[in-house]
Image 1 (cartoon, one colour):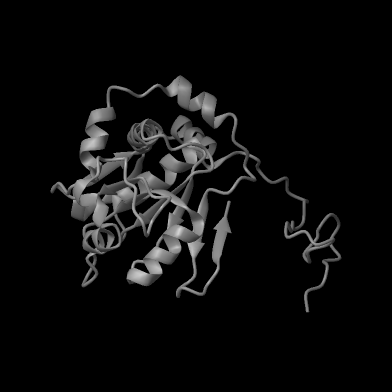
Image 2: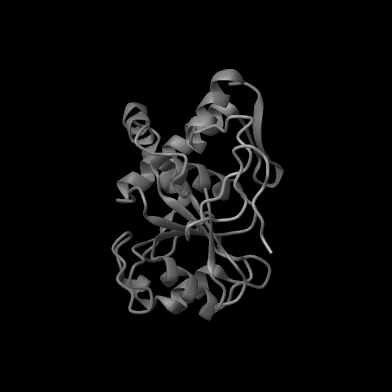
Length: 235
């Protein structure tokens, strides 16, 4: 049974039907957002290594990583992704996954982590449960062909304009952003989006938007396995 801590200022068990729980306040917690922490790290260590994906031949310093994040954040804004909107990520460990997490946090969107092992019914449930407006997907992982599964759930992709999907089974989904070099009908290509937005980044605009966000706002939803599981949120 949960009990309340006897430490001064600490509350371990929820009280008055509230789910917000805090621990000891002897050390003051930071109220900076994830984006603000990234920018602070860039200010301290701009030229230190931050991201390495050997299989993708990627090595970014903190400054280079933050610049890439801002490019994808700009692309998401151009796709009408706004604070509070849900963006799915369905991929193994890749640089695009990391960029999507920090880019959504930069603009106040919520990243939805789709289990790499999900099958059709579980994918449909997850996307609809949280109302994903966009999804970033790898082509496949092991035997799971992600893009084919999305095309099965949303055959309307074959004739849809990118960012204008209206699928009967996925009514909230508007944009599919695929990884890899190939092109797929109705989908954006991740690298092409990055290239198209490199000269369009307005950091003053991004900073102004980031300043409206609060550290207590969710930036991530993690699904438990199985279609009957409830999503778990993380700040």
